[in-house]
Image 1 (tube, rainbow, N blue to C red):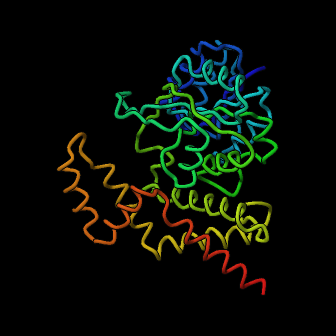
Image 2 (image 1 turned 135 degrees about the vertical axis):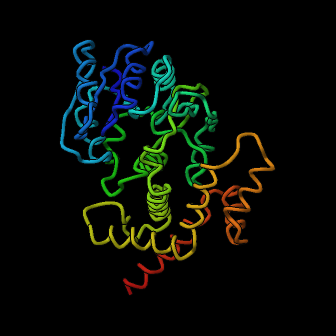
Length: 330
């Protein structure tokens, strides 16, 4: 088996039909399709079962609701493929996606391969195109600054390496993919093919859209600070690694408190609201909207820094955390 396509779904009845169909219509056919039904209470299970009798490549796993991270790790454990291709239940894979990523992966020494994507709305109308870098160096730069990167639904990676590196870390409820990509970038080559292989659906029910996307942001900063600790502070334990729940809770609370006290969470909330309300192709109206939503000069300063540098705060919090840990060990 060359490829295991991995999909985890919880109450995805609105979109899952199109997502499954897009995988089954791939030009590359030598794959298994693992679908984790994570305790859905809507019609998701019935929709999957209709496909199940039509295509033997589908492996349906029904389980109680565990959440995305443990569900994906369960899928990794049973996957038979050399490569894992991720897809979310509300996204769509274009027909040549698996074929192109597989050919590229077999020709190179990459451990993680993404592809370009376009954003669609709930009615499948194209909203935007997302162009991300293709080389390891530029992708790592964007990872560390939390700038544009390929979507989780476009990820194609070597199962053996991901299993060896511990899979998706259970400490992260969200941004578990971002954390994994950072860790993979430390041990292998990551890249992205110049092909639009997925359509990412924007809608209010997306996991990343809940609570203004703040929880996603918090866990992303935790992952980035963890990355900095691993690479710069060999004498300090990675707070996201291992079974030390007290350290984990302390770390997440520390990061959350710092982001709140430095007004970064408020900035992210305003940025989220701006993105929801901004006008398409109207620079003047969008400038006025920014002024209305982010009237405080501090937030304009944050916005400029964010646009230029991306993540401009993780370095600061990382230094404050390491100082705290160094003092505790004295």
